[in-house]
Figure 1 (cartoon, helix red, strand yellow):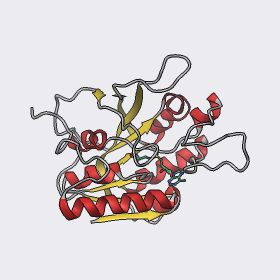
Figure 2 (cartoon, helix red, strand yellow; figure 1 turned 180 degrees about the vertical axis):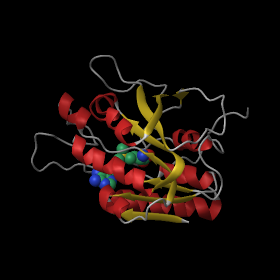
Figure 3 (cartoon, rainbow, N blue to C red; figure 1 turned 60 degrees about the vertical axis):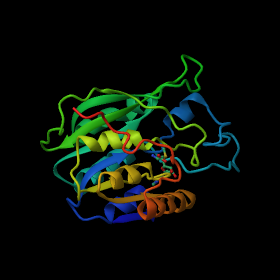
Amino acid sequence: MVRIEQVDCLTFLSSLPDASVDVITTDPAYSGMNQHMGFGHGRIVGRYQDPNNERWFREFHDDPETFLAFLRECHRVLRDDRHVYVMFDSFSLLTLGALLREVFEVKNVIVWDKVNLGMGHYFRRRHELVVFASKGRRKLSRRDLPDVWAIKRVHRGAYPTQKPVALFTRMLEGSVEAGMTVCDPFVGSGSAAIAALRHQCSFIGADIAPQAVALATQRCARYREDGVDPLEPAARIRGGWPSP
Ligand SMILES: C[S@@+](CC[C@H](N)C(=O)[O-])C[C@H]1O[C@@H](n2cnc3c(N)ncnc32)[C@H](O)[C@@H]1O
């Protein structure tokens, strides 16, 4: 089952029953780094100074109160003894990352090494971060997994912030069993949804942008039809960890 709705993340989460999902893997649209660095000429955020800014998508209002409300809703909808993975850039990790400890039991901060250099004035960016936490007690299904993951970034993807499916596959590999329900309230192009389907899981998610919902919905339909991911057609079968 795949369900992707066009709605704000908080409205979406509030529509879900208590303890109804098994894992949350999510990559929120933070505004922190863009605002602090005064970025504003890229294809993602448009022009910050321009009031008629044509952005690809809205950024989530990531003030601490809203982010805490988001995390509390994530906690409510997650079943007991389950995992959550929340992605951060360096700036949002410093401003918001500690809030996870008020809601979940934070277990580790994983470094996603994107292998190729990105933009940046003071050391060019090559990594993002994933906070790994739990609600209650749950072991990873494997004990040999490292906390630095080298996975090439998506270059010129169909969606501006498209992440590799392999990134979500690695999150799920230690945390799900077939038949579980994976949730991503910031679905974007649907990379988390494809990873969920690869693990024989159901997926529910949302995005505020209609073009994201259309893209992710079509992507999942195609994958379910013939097993081909149209946005990463050449990707390795699972993209996860080598067998122990
Ligand atoms: C960083 S992107 C996610 C990219 C996704 N992981 C992928 O691989 O394609 C964040 C997404 O959050 C969406 N978004 C922004 N504000 C939102 C909100 N308040 N509620 C739900 N989605 C929102 C944006 O439209 C964008 O698609």
